[in-house]
Length: 102
DNA sequence: GGCCCTTTGAAGTCG
DNA sequence: CGACTTCAAAGGGCC
Image (cartoon, rainbow, N blue to C red):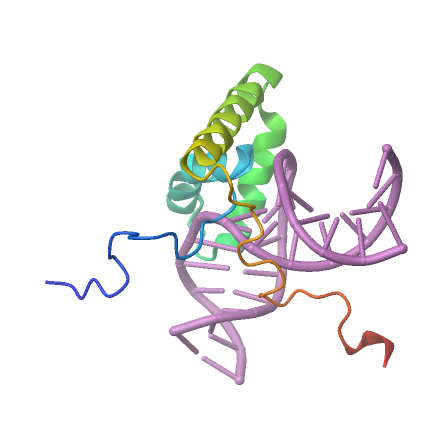
């Protein structure tokens, strides 16, 4: 039995992730396949490859994912109507402000 | 064990 | 209301 340390039911909302956009959905569709086909290891490389695939999609195919993304946002707002998506804003790095000016 | 790197979109904060 | 900044995913790679 694996230690389900963090797999507990969300009794309250510890932190609600931002509603994913069309790419996050498309990514989850293609990423495991692309990683297998292309032999991609790191997600960064796969995400970039899937990004190129995205550009090859027909507007109808892209539109499908926009509807999916919109549906997720709708579902999200229904589950947490008063939740602002700023769950972790400013927590991670990638701050362009870094010591560059120093 | 968490951030980086990466992608686009959304949506956050700032002005 | 425009412009900029950060998180969302996510997995090796790094420390």
